[in-house]
Image (cartoon, rainbow, N blue to C red; front, top):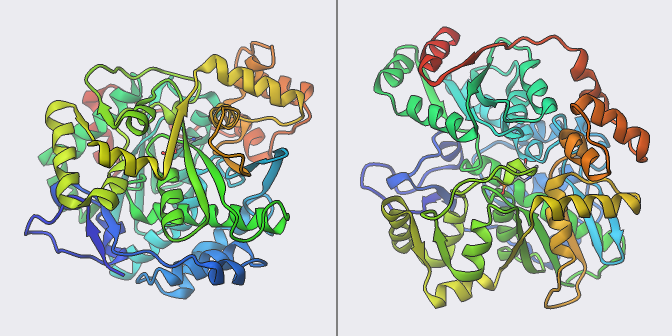
Length: 488
Ligand SMILES: *Cc1c(COP(=O)(O)O)cnc(C)c1O
C-alpha cells in the first residue's frame, strides 16, 4: 500500500511513500498530509468472518488487509497492548443506554481517554521502526490534557524515542496534570507553559520552526516526528473500533448484518470521525456520521453551510476541552477524498491566506451524504450528564455532547452508537457540578461522585494522588529552548 499526498506533490518529496515512511515523517508536500491510495474492502464476507473474532484478531486482519509494510509479528506485539485494558477479552465494551442507543466506551486503557486506542499500538510500532533503522526520534506534543498523558504512557521506556510534552499550566484538569507530571522515565520530559493552550501550541510551533533548534537536533542525530492525529499511524487504528462497534450490535442481536446504523462522534481534530468515514467508505453499513461539537462549532458550520471561517472566531474555553479547537486538521483528508488534491490545496491555501473558504453547493451536498452535525453548550451538557446519571449511567462532558446529539430529531430512526471518548474520572469536577455539588478540586469531586452515584474510580486514577511529582518545570515561552536542550 502506497500513501499519497492531500495537496499534490512538490517535485521534491517522493510521490508515494510506504506506511513506515508516512508515520516517521508525517508531513507531506505543501504542508499536506498522507492518505492511503485505497482502502481494504469491508464487505459482508469480511464482517461475517469476524462475527466472533476477538478485538485483536479483527484488528490484525484489518491491518493485514491494508497491506502495510509492518511485519505481522510486530503488529501482533503492538496489539498486545490491548491486553492491559480493563477487560482483555473485550477492550471496547458497548453499553446500551436507550432502546436504540449504545455507548461504545473507548476509554478503558491506561490513561482513561480514547487516545489510548491508537497511541498504545502506535507507540510500539514507532519505537520498533526506529530501532530497526538505528535512528533516534523526538516527539514533541502540545496537549490540552488527553494527548499528553497518552503519548507519555505509550512511549515510556521505549527505545530510540524521546517525548517532550508541553501543557498549559492551569489549563488542564488536576487529574490530567498529575497523569503527566508523575510519569517517571528517562526518555520523557514534561514542561508546563505559562498561559493557555493556544500559548502552549504557539511555543511549540516557534520552537519547531527555529533554525538553531533544528541544527542542534541534527548535531545530536535526532529526527523529529509527530504523534498527533495528522499521523496516519494513529488514524489506521481509529478505523477498527467502528467495525468492532458494528459487530457488537450484530452479536447483541440489536441489528442484523447489513442493517444501517448511525455513529455519533465527539469531534475536535476529526481523527475519530475520519476513522468512521473511512470505515463507511470501505463498506461498513453506516447511514450517516453525526458530528458533535461544543460551542467552538466550526465543524458544525462547515458541515451545515460549507463555510469554514476562522476570521470572526475566538477560541472559547469549555468543559469539553479536547474539542476546543478551531483548526481541525483531519477534515483535509475528507476533502482530498471527495474533491481531489488540486482543490484541497486551493481550499487550504485560502484558509492560510484569508482565514476562510467556502465549498460549492455540489461539494457541500457530497459532504452531507456522509455527515450531519450539531453542537451543544456547557449547560446543555451538564443537563445531559444529570439526566443520564438518574438513569444510572455516568458520562463525561465530551460524551454528553454526543448524547445531546442523539436526542435531537434525525432523518431516520436507526440504532445509534455514540462514542464515549473519556472516562468521567478525568473530568470529575464538571460531573460533580452537573450532579449538584461544587467540589473544590478533582480529588474531592472523585470522592463525592463515587459516594453519590453508583460508580468507582479505577486504581490508575486513585494512585495518582500519592505518586511523587517528577516534572516540576513551568516556564515562559522564552526559556523553552534551553529546557529542551538540557533534556536532549
Ligand atoms: C481527542 C479527544 C476528542 C476529539 O477527537 P478528534 O479525533 O480529535 O476529533 C474528543 N474527546 C476526547 C475526550 C478527546 O480526548
